[in-house]
Length: 292
Ligand code: C2E
Ligand code: MG
Ligand code: MG
Image (cartoon, rainbow, N blue to C red):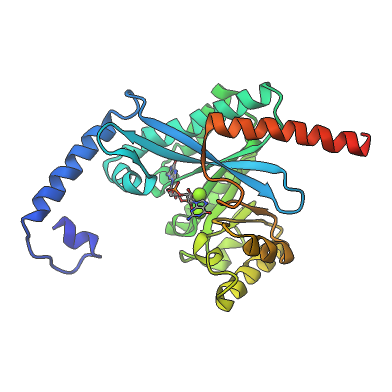
């Protein structure tokens, strides 16, 4: 029955004994997921976002990984859907922003150049009635100022209940938090709603950036997104930038920031801190040269 529902309901699926194996694997995984926080098996990686014209690091995206005791490191795509279904996304979803907001505050206290930290929200997290209270509590407890936090939601999440989204986003905006639409153009969204959402950033997803320099349609879409975003006074971040030619194209089109393997893979926090430390010396060098 669940398999039929997964396939979009109103259909049927024949029973197959391998379904039992899959179901028990799932149950084992869900059981492990239940203890993941107390066993401290999650790690957050940080992937830098870089200003395309100055090369400065302006922010990081927090990407969670699960150090599974038997299966090794698992990517969020392997466990976030399960966490969503089981409701475990709520405690997990609070752990990620709390960890990265505390880390960001610690970096600021250590004297590193301030950066924004972006956290991904799943459907269920976004639809929680008390999301605003949860975020406010995390900021208060970690001492991070709200404008250093960005929440990333996809178009599909934003569109599920657009009236609710407007109310929720306005509350978050009033708190000073920045909102970013992730993987823009890959879901579905209505521009008439989009224009009413208080957004700061559109992120162009990997699927458009990947073949940017070989597929003229992708190039056209990327150019159109950048133009539209700028005329709506939104910042544009291109994700999944792996090649120099992509960077050149994005720069020509005046994309604001890039994120991708070309600059850095997602890094453990200690490794990212080393990059931040280099930024300090780079900034010093820059200001010494300018004599400021
Ligand atoms: P996303 O938010 O669109 O994150 C970007 C994904 O692209 C990340 O995959 C990142 O590692 C990958 N990536 C970045 N640059 C490149 C590149 O140059 N080339 C390629 N091939 N890939 C690149 P990751 O870490 O596996 O995360 C997958 C998705 O899982 C994320 O997509 C996000 O939707 C979700 N996710 C990650 N962390 C969290 C979290 O803490 N909470 C929730 N709810 N979802 C999360
Ligand atoms: Mg994201
Ligand atoms: Mg994305």
